[in-house]
Length: 210
Image 1 (cartoon, rainbow, N blue to C red):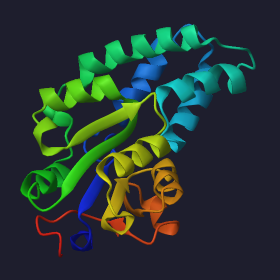
Image 2: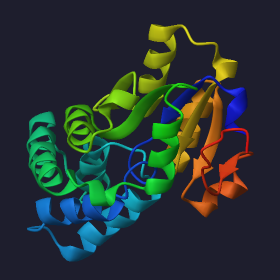
Image 3: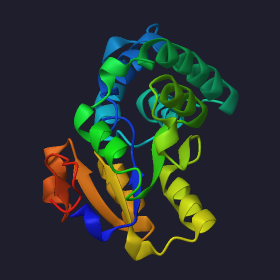
Image 4: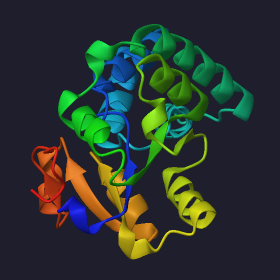
């Protein structure tokens, strides 16, 4: 399926690294002083919207769940605490999803590859460097820029033909970013996406023709 494309845009959490449980733990730790039922509500939103950034999720927590205003400065403070926790826990090769990582390593010469993630961009660069993956990607892109914009920016910067590009992700937000930019999408590691996406990858193979 992937052999007809020249450019692969990769989501990170849940696609390259099994980091979602740790990110969930991060939200719980950062928001530990707030009522558990409110944090649980955020966890449900977080798990349903894996592709959204922590900045969006912290704003959602205050504005939609707690029904109170939150300043940009407050969001940045919370995001910095979250990032600190993530860097202490995610620089771990044991969390890599071997199926996708082996494909990436074996197909570096066959595709142009970029990461477009809802996770913090600076944090992503540090994590990928620490687990030895940085060299496989032309760029590593993350929040606070929204994913739709990240994809648009990569397409514009490299002047890719949209028919040559596919985004691989595990959330509806990834599908939305692909649709918004008029490129193909393949779901992975989330069987719910089979209902809404024409393409779904059950398992990567080293050969993109298979």
